Image 1 (cartoon, one colour):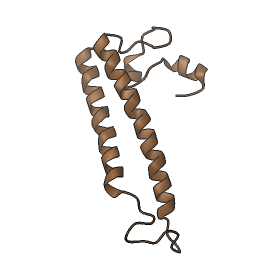
Image 2 (tube, rainbow, N blue to C red):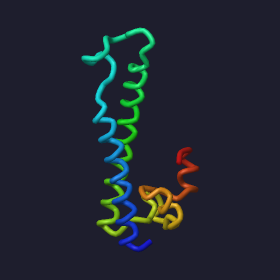
Image 3 (cartoon, rainbow, N blue to C red):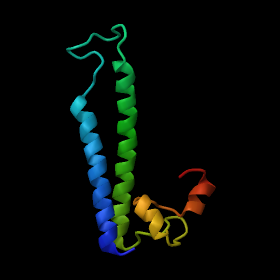
Length: 112
């Protein structure tokens, strides 16, 4: 994959992640704020707060992976597996710009 296309994919991914993080931060905590007492009957705010906290953790992991991909792009190793050095197919990078391994390597590790 050429570096201009990779740069565009990573910039789009950064925008998506940062937008999602901003949306979570914009809402803030729902349970126990000035509008609702903690544990109010029929309130699903505690669930939503826990969901948002988990989502924030996921987004931080995605941002960390993005920063690693940007570093690989800068040092000329973007598109190569961090495990084997084998090329990662362009189709995989189009779908998953922060991919660090080939599909076979991810399968072997039991994740995708």
